Length: 64
Image (cartoon, rainbow, N blue to C red; front, side):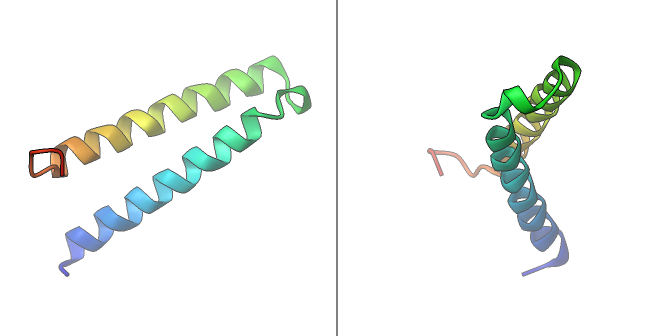
């Protein structure tokens, strides 16, 4: 496995962990201020978009 492939896999794994963490934190909205919630939601949106873009770039077509 070449270096770029390993970096992509590591970044994808990291993005998935960040998404899970942010979603878990947002379930406990009562613990955070409105500003913090807005920031977390914005970050969640950004990470999801980047992950989707990465998947689209690495897609080999036909749903794989």
